[in-house]
Length: 346
Ligand code: ASP
Image (cartoon, rainbow, N blue to C red):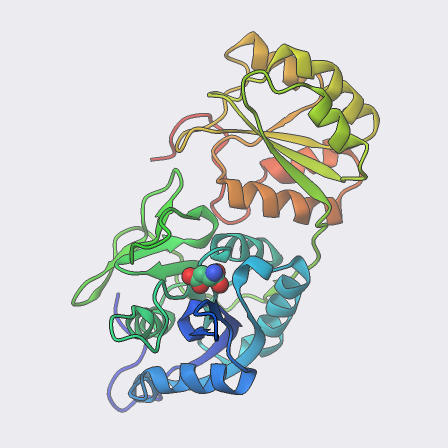
């Protein structure tokens, strides 16, 4: 699998969507990193590597200029709507994004763009582009190279790794290989060449379907031994529309929480239970403490990453009314995010 164009052929057309992040950030008077003006931000991106224009016909589109800690579902909607609008004009897309919430946005985009037959490649930087040692230039170049290839789907490239967007998680605040793939092997590697290591989807001509819209009023609760059930009851009384619980091991949850789970079911508030383990899946029928939670209406997340569980729940809440309908969406595999066998998928 190589680049999509050959000598004498037209260069691929790539659209880069700019969402902000360290790539263009500069220190303010106090020495802390902040986004520059919109004009300076876009200029910084374009001047990182002028030779990129030899590789592809590139357009740059502005979505946001934020530290990605300030990312919101409204901006996800803006991003996916913009991709959908320009979809037929380009061969591939790159999204420049802060690393802090890149995995959330990559997951959200994976759900909202159905029938995606072209590459959408996320990248960013750990070190600002103006610094000598920055990884910004290299990540940008590699993302554009990947977007020019005959691959499709939402991917993330940082450092040497190419990951499936919906399985990616940020694992290091400083390393250039800042992301890992949760319960899924990496798709490829960046070396002298870009090597695709796994069977990936090729470009396809099917019609893209835009399914934007996320409900952001959710809460995420990580269990700790002894934490009282009143914490969960408090959340249920605050108008949240759904809750993700990071539970133990195979999805086990203290028995004192069971009445709260029943109250959630009575209020039609879905509770999705995932594992706190850094790898693996829920298997909630293994122990009584998991099985009872299922009987109280909890939905298991199986092997989905934290980021894909959260964004999928937000997306599902927009499209379904009952807990049963939410469960059907949560357990459907839309973009490679879930394997519900309770075993490793590879
Ligand atoms: N705080 C930054 C952001 O997520 C970190 C980064 O870009 O790497 O926007």
